Length: 540
Image (cartoon, rainbow, N blue to C red):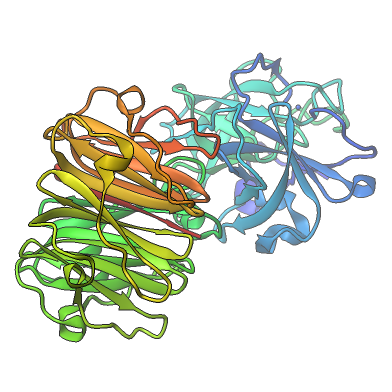
């Protein structure tokens, strides 16, 4: 089975030594590199079982996001082409078993992404390194493969190696201490630098000293497949996979940047929308809405014109089109809000202190802008507005004189009169400066910032027309001064983002059980200027 020439000739000869192994029995617990049992530090090392129990193969994998693993492509057999899994693939992460639903292989190396059927909540993913290790750098490998004495060890085992770059896609590993060997079943396990970052995955090995190996084989060197240059590919693959995502726009400088909060809770980098959809002379405000996996983006140019484009579910962009040319020009346009109802895009725009409404239907036709006050009644100069879809109806909250007013457009296109929100939920401290809305089911969530942004509140208009009292968000967001806020419904939950006076963007989620996640800071990678307004929308 093994070449008998001097160490490492297989790098040139192309000899592939797959280190997944067949299992002669059903696997009920963890499977393990010759080396030291792990005490929990490498909990992101997963054990894979591939195929039905009668002919199962074992490999290792590495958790790199709450619902994604990396492993060696050679472990997958008939599934190496990608897409939905053609055979049962199970992963044990921590003490929990997950099902692999989707696979995305690389064409240039022995590596594939595996999507889990649900989020891992009790194990933190490995951190990706951004550079390959220096020559002879110390690395640690981990895996669930064989040891010298066990076919199915009960814990992850680790070993120490020295790593050097072999090719553009591989590292060569040499044993750094006695007892270290990568064995069958370790393929896909992590290779970590001295800082604990993932630089590669185990791929091929001579397996000297492993149980079942020819006793005459003493070589322990190995090849690992590099991961340090794959961050963008990993994020791109995950962002294009099916499932709920939080599309995010951040206005900064003279343009708007688009990024995505993925289901695992991490963020892609942000890119300049004008570089994707065309230069409209700068963007000072934006809005968005999701329809059938696509993200509709509205942008107000520096010369106060409204433009529209679509980011398709496959990541491609359309070209900005001038909305005013088809829906009517609005003078002194300052803000837009957008929401989807079915396949229709509803847009509310503020211009000259007035509020207007238009609809883009599924065929791409725009109705003319209509003055909402003409149907609902005047409330004075409007300074901010937000929209939500709840129960198939459009709900709008408008701010005038520091107070919130609410109206509904029903499915027949008829509007209710403005209602005083404070009369229903209680009066907040200070005048309202910004507002966000999101619909979950039949309920509409309203989030406001008041008193020059120093206070933030949340309330709900229930589907039966009643309101919950205004709730202070200080216990959720902390003591912050909000410069903008945005709310969105994503997979039935409320997501809230806030930009702050100290140039941060914060994010939290309100679950269906009414609990909130701890507020975290948005990773604004790719946004080169101070963040202005932030906009969220959910896409599926």
